[in-house]
Length: 135
Ligand code: CMP
Image (tube, rainbow, N blue to C red; front, side):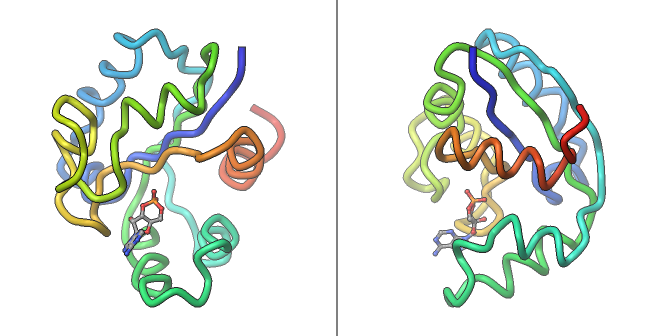
């Protein structure tokens, strides 16, 4: 078993598209270990997205993710990182495969509905930033 991190981004939380996504996760045999609606602060989001610092979209990304609450989800499954990325789909919803979360609920390259960790190391790092070490 391994863990990964899914974040439901502010535009979907604002529109209450939460249950639909959790259902897709559990239908695909992910186990929800922790789930919390929370408002991330700027320092946390800067650390979270540090790999994108300096890119043209970085400042807009930080403003967007801190614009309202997100739903943070700690997930467990065999092959969790790769399976979640397959379920989430391509970063750009316009390129995401039919049936994926971003195909169904993504709105633009920035407002793409959800974030999923891209490696086991990223998952551990991101879970620690968002949940702390406790959960
Ligand atoms: P996410 O998977 O959370 O990782 C970085 C985020 O930056 C991405 O989803 C989008 O929300 C946002 N973003 C905005 N513009 C771009 C871009 N050109 N390339 C990648 N990500 C972008």
